[in-house]
Length: 385
Image (cartoon, rainbow, N blue to C red; front, side, top):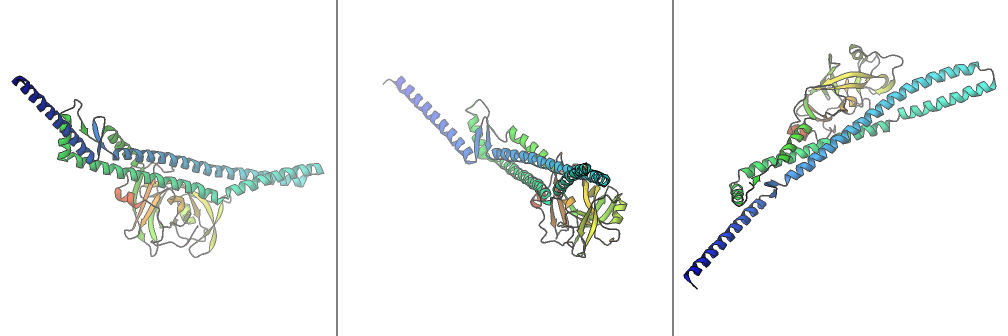
């Protein structure tokens, strides 16, 4: 073998060894990035949490749609109840006229015709009355709204948790010298520059999540100890503020006739009457009315049903009950003297326009995961249950 051949062979050997070393370096770099939980997507190395955030965000969007749909169904149900009451009044008037006609009939044929009409009107009234007084149907509709609201809020919390974990993970990886060296080593062998995430899609999802979170509004409302019950300031129609007992077990807001007069509610003979159990355990007949607006903290709810106690029962307690609280996920913190109200701002809720607050804080989000159970807090006497 000539000297020239030996030199050429030696050169090829060195080149091969260099190539093998370079390939080994590439494999070592890729192995390190994989060990750090990174995988290549195009020219970007990303973590698995990006895909998890997308799933959580999709679930939150789906939950928002379901909540909006449930609220629309509730409004349709309530409107149907209003329409039924109007129809019942009309049918009652028809029955009164038919009874008068029946008294004036002179022939058997006329008598039978009016009786048949009376029977038909009575049957319609009976059917409408059954539908209007079906508490289970109303509870079912309300339960669906509450369930969808809770599911949506939980999906938002889940998405935020993943987003925070991913952001922290990327920050840690960006400070990892070995990750930087591995990317630099790979970039020496490729024309397309390889980078560490997050991707543009992830950053866009973070912005979407922030918008979704903006629909979850939360506030801590101060409670005062009223000797076994919690007291809270409530503003009616933006003008009259009264101290009320927070009663998470009461199905409806309860006020006195004096307060009703102050806020412009004037019951008449046609105003529906309901039976209400008051503090001393007795049952009285109260008027079922609608308060134009109630504000607690920064939250204003419009068209809130209430019971108005008889004029001779001015000692009846003012209760902030379910007809207001049903619009929220709420949690009572007895030790801190706080009522945490959290609501979802959707196109179909009954809130008056209010300043858009920041998304619920992390502590508030954790605190409002479930509605108050009412087992560890002062309670008002049973009323309106």
